[in-house]
Image (cartoon, rainbow, N blue to C red; front, side, top):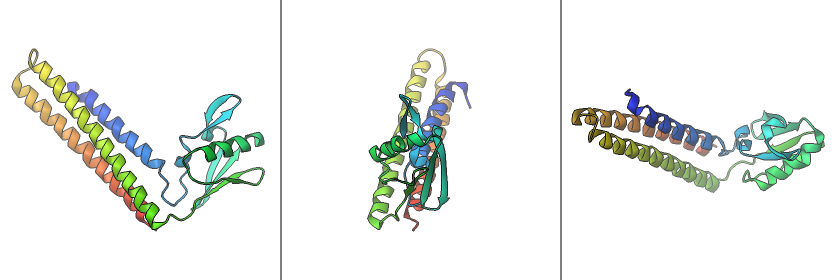
Length: 183
């Protein structure tokens, strides 16, 4: 890998990792604690991730349990969940909060699969934009610093990187779609 292409590979990798973390927040019928990753709770005036104010467990396949370290946080956590796009009403017994995930309907599964495809397409567009930026930068270098043959080689390497990350994103999309469509 040419050092001049390293920054573009780093950016492509970030785009892939962003897609991966985005997929983790999509619920697929099973309880996944990552659906709470983006939620913040008002903890002594500071917006704090839910993971930092309590213990999150998955006691059963479709239940997430949140045990706050301070009982006074139960209302704040419930409020944060209700205000979010998780789409589940929390219940509490005074010491723990439970989120019970209902089975997804066939229609909802199809909608989620479409959303997964859309997010993958956005990720692939980002990777292609990074390739374009790289090609533009190489053309500018070609006017002053490097030969046309070197530019061709670097462009081919950049294209291989692009193909690799797009293939990885497609595989990630297939995996997530399969997970969603599995009843």
